[in-house]
Amino acid sequence: MYFMIQLGVHLFSVFEMIVIKRKTERKFYEYLLHHFVAATLILFSMMCNEIAAGTMILIIHDLSDIFIALGRAFIETKYESKKKTAAIFIIMTTIWVYMRILVFPFCLLANVYAHKPTPQDEWYMISFEYSYLLLMAFVLYGMHIFWTYFMLQLGWRCASGKNFINVHENIKPKPWSC
Image (cartoon, rainbow, N blue to C red; front, side, top):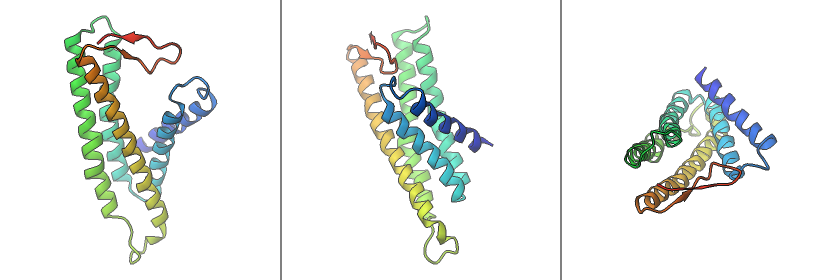
């Protein structure tokens, strides 16, 4: 059930990016790649009978996404302050780095890679699907490293007192002070 809900979310996001947001989204290709990779990872983990690993990967992504959404929501409230924003940013970044940079590749992907089919296995016939699953997972990991760089850059700019641009506003970004 959880898999099917997540698959529906990511397939809709691919559809939304292609049909609705292709001309207005500033990060069109980045988001399209992310949602496509996520949808194919969900499908191929079901095809390869890696439901447990796929579920764990979805859970670690959702855990860090919760704190990102809370951080974004808090910044938009009237209760936002520099100290609270800094604390939320540190918590969010710590959970992001732990879950997506450490747990995802070194625990989950390493486990999936260690259990890939060998020519002696009777389920070797899905070795292509398994290889594709691992390839897309490593593409996703590359995107995590890319986004982590920008998160740390944002934190550094805020800590040094510089302004940053809100890249999530599509119309006309406004500079925010940290």
